[in-house]
Each structure stands twice: as C-alpha cells, then as structure tokens.
Image (cartoon, helix red, strand yellow):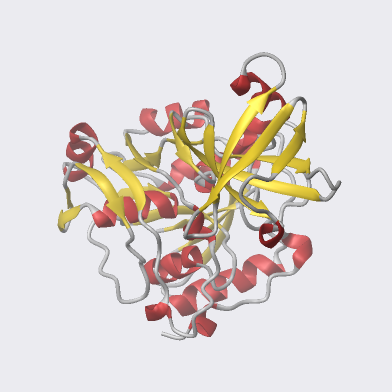
Length: 337
C-alpha cells in the first residue's frame, strides 16, 4: 500500500503541549469499526464500554530514557537523548548536532554532569560515558534530566511522572506507551469492579516505532525489534477471556499479535518483535483498542487503520479535527470497538 494513503491534515495548534491536570479528564472518541459510527465522550466514562468477562491488557514498561542539554568547549549547544545504560556509566544516546560530534568530545551538561563520547554506533547513536563532579551520578541525572518528550512537544513537563503510566513498573522504554497515560489507579479499580480482568504485559518502546514512514510503500518500511515479555499468568488470563480482549495502546497490540498461537490464544513469551501491523493483518487476539491520536504516515496510525479500516479511521480523524480534539502523546483518547 502507498504511504501517502495514510496522510491527513493535522493543524499544529491541535498538538497537545501539556497534560491535563486530571489524567481521566481527556475526551474520548469512540469508533465502531463495523459501522463506522463515531461517538464523543469523556475518558472517565470508558468503563461503560466494557462488559463482564472482557480482559484489558496494559503495557507496564517504564520510560528509562532521558534528555540532557549541554555545551561543547566551543560553546555550541548539544542535545542528547539517552536511550539506555549499556554498562556502568556508559549510555547509548542520540545526539544533535550529530555530524559535529566526534569520539573523544566532551560535553558539559550542567549540574556538574559531564559526558565523553566513547564511540559512534552503526545506527548513528553514540556511546557516552557520564560523570558527576559531586555525589551520586544517578541522583545528578535525576535532578538535571528532562522527560524524553517527542520533538513536537516544545516545552518540558513540570512533573516528569506525567510521562509515565500509573502502572509503569519495568524500566526499558525510550518513550511512554501513551494510551495508558489516561488511566488513574481509581479508574483501573473501577475496571476490575465491572468484572473486567486486567493483564499486565511488557513491551519496551524503541525509537523506531515513532520514525515516520519515508518509503513510498509500506512494504519497504522496517521496524527495529523491540523487547517484550508476556508471563504465563498474563497469557492464561488473555487466552481464557470469556469476553473481548482490549489492548491499551499499539504497543500492547503488537506484543499480543506477535505472541498469538491461534485465534484467541496467546503464548507466554520473552523475546523481540519487529512486527509491522498494516492493512491486511488478521487480528487473532485484539478485539478492542484504546489508543491516542497519532501522526500521519506513522506506523502507529497504520496499525490503527489496519484494525479499524483505513477509510473509517480517516473519517473519524477528520471529525476529531473538526471537533478540536487534542492530538498526539499528551492529547485525547480514542476507543475502537
């Protein structure tokens, strides 16, 4: 399929720049994928769309990446997104301006933090050794680091925990599984009180998930593998669902579909997936999807189009634009049933 088939007009002023004070206060667009009917609601009412016997699958990965801003000895500004700790005090980072940074360069990040570039990797990332002038390195990082927000969010969060889900538990993600940002602890209890079981799985979000699809056809685009884990307990809960399985987010969806043994049955797994879900994919596990509004031409938008139907999704997005929904990571929610 052509990548241009997954384009839509997103007014820049609709890209949410701040989270709402109340996580569950977001708007909720509900799309019936059979009829294409659209309803407008609030996320706090989402439990009313579930039924006893349904299973809600959440991704408990926690964002462990962080952003630091610094300067080279020349005074030139440097921005670094630290993706993971490789070992000890050595981290893998994406750095700007990449072409001007070389092995051996030192960057002063402020707050007594200093980085030395150890090597450049094949994917363009750098290995960087971090050190702190005083005290514990991780404490210094905690004080100085910004949440690793996408570039379309132009100001730092006042409270970094707002870029974590309330159920995040396992460090490893480069970005938040943002569909889950709408849930509060009270809302999850309300889900269970309604007779819906909650299954926790883990998929660590990598940077490639959010890269735009630049190839002319979807078949030419490749995703980098992302680590995921589905425990035996979670697999049993999902496979024995008396009702529908709802995935919270595209990350949960990819993990579930990658682990599908047969329609309705998920295998326990601990591995990687590079599954790129696009139209034509036969969904064997997921029957309902809680998601956010995604960038045009993104793998996330393509996944939701595969689940909901491309034309129905484009019409729903057009209505969301007309109704001035808040888009992308910190924006409003969507439920596809």
